[in-house]
Length: 322
Image 1 (cartoon, helix red, strand yellow):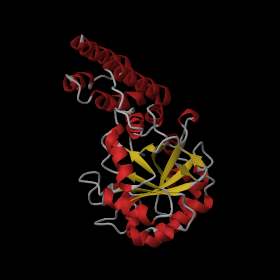
Image 2 (cartoon, rainbow, N blue to C red):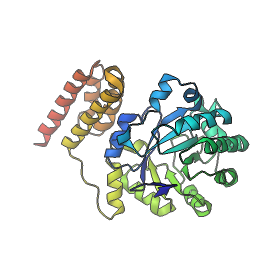
Image 3 (cartoon, rainbow, N blue to C red):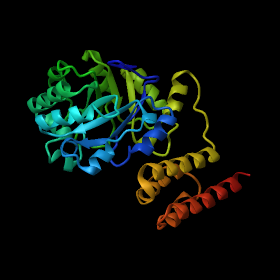
Image 4 (spheres, one colour):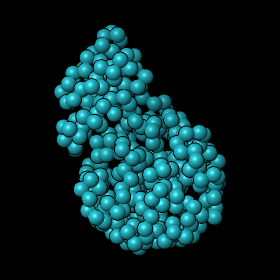
């Protein structure tokens, strides 16, 4: 796949996710085979005001690239200024979020609320494209109640954006309910730009099926990658006609340790404890004794204690296997 001059090795991309896709997660996804990763949603206002938290979220490590920075906002002037700043950072493309269904985002007139204001959305896209030195893409969903993209997107496609990502659910669906892959197929049929499909990709087989059934250029994988950074490599294995390589208990333990260490390196001890508790649940999901482990490890207040509980949990699993 290619977006402007950016060539991607595989069609499997890690989705931007608020509160999740920090530097540690992005590095794990890249090591797991994601051809492109994204920052969390970055506030245009926060970027323009140089708010420390926003600047930290926008920081990209050289080893994680290619990386996209996803902007959200509802003011064309501010979005343009933010695009100028963002494109000078260590990023390979800018993505405009016009698909987030979260109420706090929609209340600001941002995210999927822009689907209800086509003229404002067009102004925003123009401002970002005009001020960005990096390629610009847009991420949308199907509208509030149904698919209105045939009316909404054509003017936007003429601004100079380089690709469109469609989350195939309505705003009211949020992140639940069945994604309508037919909507992706319909968009592919008339959209002259690369289309990235998103929604209901839970397994490597789903990722490949989306490619084949819709004709989309690439597939964006979100929640299925939580605790499973290998899903991107596994999808590529399936695409090439093979089967996903089995991940051993030892490999899962090593990945959890690697993710914990990256979280500490990138965010410091205190910052890491919060995120480690979060992704401990992901990496141990479905394993025997995982619920008890999370209950025991949950009250831990430092990484050393968390790691001791983790060592005990995996030692017990390895004992059960032997």
